[in-house]
Each structure stands twice: as C-alpha cells, then as structure tokens.
Image (cartoon, rainbow, N blue to C red; front, top):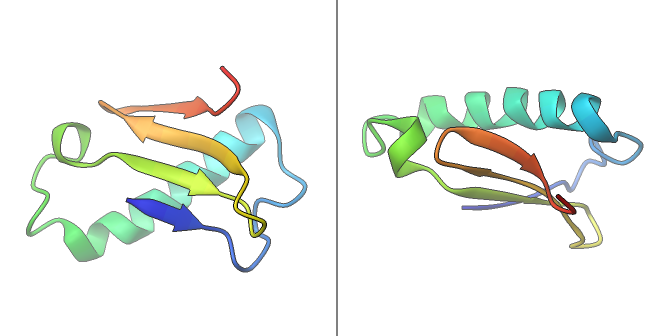
Length: 69
C-alpha cells in the first residue's frame, strides 16, 4: 500500500511524533480494508510518502519504521 501525504500532515514531523501520526492514519485506513486484510500485522505492508513523494516511513510485519533506519 502506498500512502501519500497530500495534506502535508507529516510535513514538519520527525521521529516518534511522525511514527505516531502515521500509526493513527494507518489505523483509520485499516477500518476500510479489514474485511479483506483480516490480520493487519500479516496482511498489510504500507509505505508512507510526503507530498513530494519522499519516503518517510513504512509498516511491515506489525512494526512501524522510519525510512532512514
């Protein structure tokens, strides 16, 4: 899943604050796909990009990671 920040929600965020914001956004999205992706940790891989399409973070196997780590 590719998630692009078109509203600049993540614009000034870094570190834990960025990951917390991303967690909130992915949780909101998951509500709409949970009938198909029944186990978020196994069924969802998401990459988060800035408005300028710069990779910021990703979600994989139940964990959130900053892109540069």
